Length: 146
Image 1 (tube, rainbow, N blue to C red):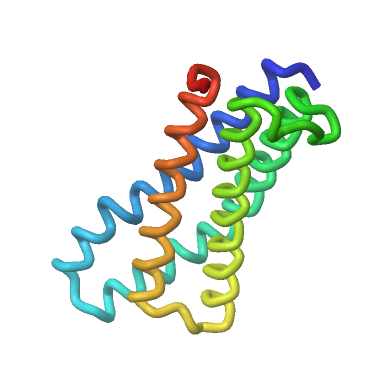
Image 2 (image 1 turned 180 degrees about the vertical axis):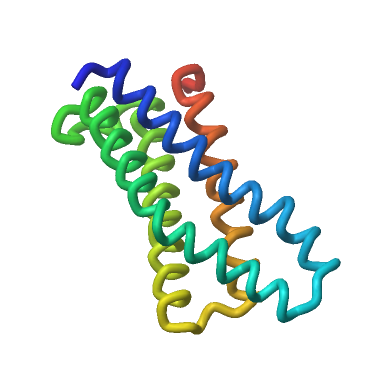
């Protein structure tokens, strides 16, 4: 697949994923303080249910396009640690796989009804911080060198 298509798919998937997490962390947390606990739990359950339907596809596009782009720069992922770009890309990929672990943990906790408000807040804040670091790396790894 042409690199231009990969990067476009990757950016759209990233916008969708980051947008959902941004909404949950920035908006939902301020709403939490103004709603009764039972209503907030219902709202959280509805958001989680919808996210479970959409996010696996978004993440699949995000990761597959990201891996394909990484493969474009480093065929067979060899010699990634031989340049500043490769090192920063490796850090970005490590953060992305950590983020994926957070997602699977959240899915598991939701399906087993073990997702509490505190766990929901912690996971989403952690994912949000990961996303900020990934965006900073993505925007700068082509320009940072040492």
